Image (cartoon, rainbow, N blue to C red; front, side, top):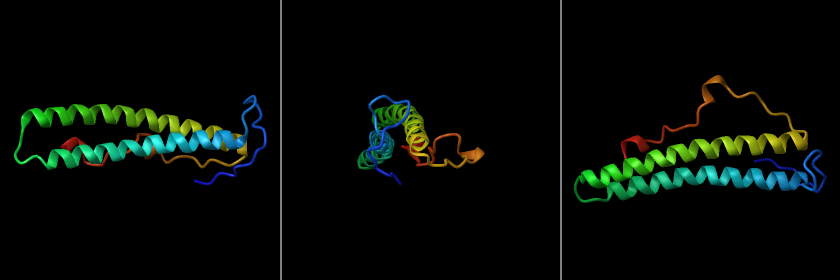
Length: 112
């Protein structure tokens, strides 16, 4: 991500600087990306079971559902933090394509 990391005040954000807002955006992005790593670990753990186990499958499915919900939340938080930083930094934000309104969940986690 591009951040200017300048110690200039962010107008309308009290004592926060543009750098503070950039750090918040970076943290929100890292939190969002961590949901993909968690999904991958669940998938690998499930695939490592020697034979199909319905209880394990149900547990992984429930965990993946929880991760999807959390991923949607972290995606919104990341977008909001990025937009807040970009606005304070004077960076133009391109419009999002209509088909990217929903967070990407095509990582195969629904198949555990």
